Amino acid sequence: MRRWRVDGTEELFRHPWLRLERQALVAADERREALVIDAPDWVNVVPMLADGRVVLVRQWRYGIAAPTLEIPGGLVDAGEDHAAAAARELGEETGYRAKSWRRLGLLHPNPAILSNRISTWLATDLEPPADPVGPHGVEGEEIAVETAPLADVPRLIREGRITHSLVVAAFYLLGLELP
Image 1 (cartoon, rainbow, N blue to C red):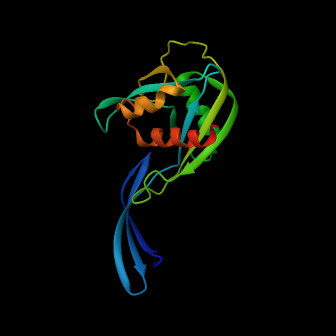
Image 2 (cartoon, rainbow, N blue to C red):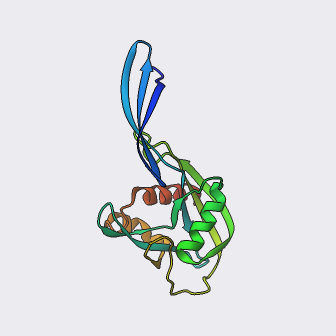
Image 3 (cartoon, helix red, strand yellow):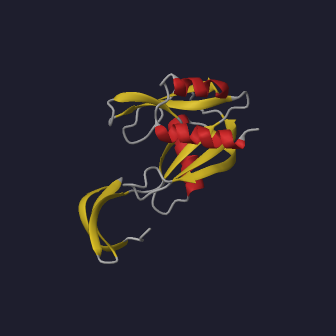
């Protein structure tokens, strides 16, 4: 397999959350072009309550024009490490704080077009939010916090109630850690 080298980059679009680039690629005597979305890294958090329930968030997703059932997560800010971003996202989206953290894995969300990575974290020893009703979220997010027994998650995925692929991947990583 040839290793493709970036020979030039043209920025087509810039937004605070991403940059779209056209890359000129070279391998030996062949040239091609690729579109790459350069995005910050992301984090996902699987918050587990002591009774075996998972803290979930329901929020509107503009890409599908519908709400989704997910776990907390979001962008890693510039200069922020993944662990700090996970703790921040958990607090912003649910109000919970965790005393114990464990990284479950690091994945590439879609290496065909995205440059970034997503780290998934297990948050345990949770402290409940000061205001359990909310509102939760920042910068225009509308988030409702829910819980479900971890044992129900496979059914929620099978029934199409959890459809976000990065959330499904997070639960798969969690399953690799469980006895």
